[in-house]
Length: 308
Length: 177
Image (cartoon, rainbow over all chains, first blue to last red; front, top):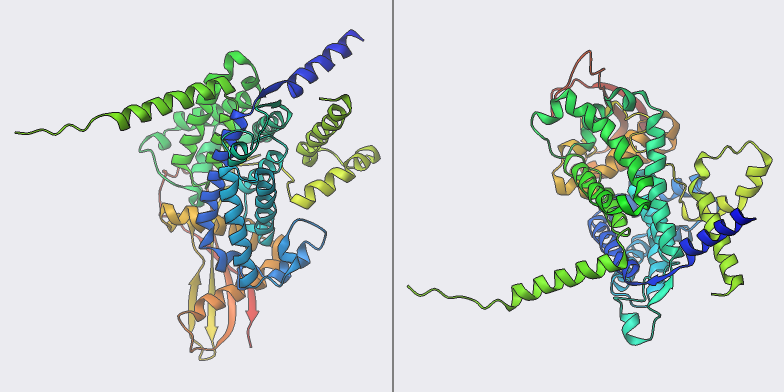
């Protein structure tokens, strides 16, 4: 009985403690900005990937996914008018999400458009897009429009809110790390230290090189085992206050390293944004005030003109 | 927050936990398949089945790319090269390189996604028509080119090495006329 009571207390504290909404609101801006960047990159692909003359035809998609799901393309014949119209709505919804105007409705619209485009040609997509859909869906349930938003300027929004929505996103991030580490532990190349060697020799993923380093067996082995350790730590130890901050920084370096070496568009940026959600609102407030005072100092510096 | 609200939200949280582990839950037992019916509806509606198997259990060891040989009625053959991520600039990789890599290496050239073959052949025809608009195509041969990375102990390939010998196989013929 006592144990059940303490479990209940823990649950209540963990999910229903009221916290300021600044953290999740800043995350909304960061998340939506990355998606907007992704969207801009994808605009030039409409003809090849989503339009009526795309690599996969709308008929194939309808045959493969005949069940009820969030794909607005199923309501049309997939013509250019519909595709560009949907892209326009998607873009507008992304902008209003960034600025926090009708935030929840905007995010729901973003999710619907995003899912439709993804389902239009799902065979093109990888983990980045699954992450996009999963997190954007969870974001709908958070008070991410309560701070740093037009919504909060035009009407009163509570600045403190139960944290359960943010917790779900944080748990989702842990699940990503823990599942991937778990699967890798079942593979022999991750155990014998050769996995990073094979992954970096896949031509489709190569981005930049590190002369000598990526040809050193010792480095390749350390990078393989290091990946497992970092992923396991990021999925578990990040929840403990002693490790949280160093792990956030380690995670950011880890993802920037992958971004430099491998071409997995946007995935690392999404993961870095998610890691930032582990900063406390106080830490975020401090970072924002530091950044703004630095910016002020830069702009208030008088110009010096040297006269010889 | 009222107790009723907390119970509803807690149920939603548990529902999300269940969805996060869905792919790894054995569905043979009746209990699980019953519990997961609503979860499956939710997951398939938003297409958010998640396995997070990036480079797991082992990274793939096959490099691949795709070309389409288009035969015209005069007997001549032109080759359309589907974009190959490794030959693109950084910006192009971000824009479309990874997407072509994904659909080609894990879709079109695999035997379990035969339904993509016809579309890929027609796509190459449309692309070819942009430059060869006056010529009449007769058939399209989809050709996959693969290179399996050898065991690192038997042959160590330096990073960024380009001299790999690919094996080419025609796996689909599309008759135009």
